[in-house]
Amino acid sequence: MYCSVPGNRSSKTFKPKKNIPEGSHQYELLKHAEATLGSGNLRMAVMLPEGEDLNEWVAVNTVDFFNQINMLYGTITDFCTEESCPVMSAGPKYEYHWADGTNIKKPIKCSAPKYIDYLMTWVQDQLDDETLFPSKIGVPFKRNFMSVAKTILKRLFRVYAHIYHQHFDSVMQLQEEAHLNTSFKHFIFFVQEFNLIDRKELAPLQELIEKLTTKDR
Image (cartoon, rainbow, N blue to C red; front, side, top):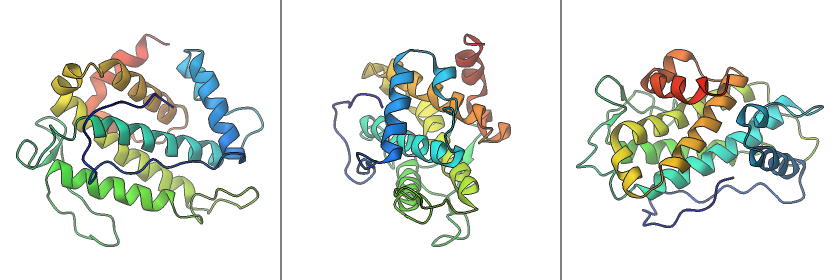
């Protein structure tokens, strides 16, 4: 939904873009989202379009946020290394340990690039699962879809939090701060609109969230 950004990207942590099939209903929804985003009113852009299914709207936007974060993180992979970021953190108070409940059941402490690689690979696996994210019209969403989507968004938030806390200088150096802020603001308005992430999970960026969202009340 945001233009592609040139720059060196590590193929290991920068995942392929997830495409929504052209001509599908979800593709039409994505186009609707792009058109309303173009109006500049993010509060309105995140609202469920009239007559649309909430699960489908959340699915389309989750794929879009994955692509945006993928691209944003891809611009700073040269700065996010085992040496610079030996732990996955969002400032001094917040540290994340990885577990996916399947391959890694007990949370492990690992570097930020390793954590983000695990995270993005896990998200990609969920998005590629047709039983969870059906791309065909008429295929129903599973009953646990919303809880999976919430977990995906909660984990994607951690990548934003890490970028803001540990790499904002690099983002400014690359003159990408406006792009990052717009993407994050869109993400926050969306999760707030449908109550998709617990407030305590958003704590690492609470001040920024208040600053970005109060202007639009």
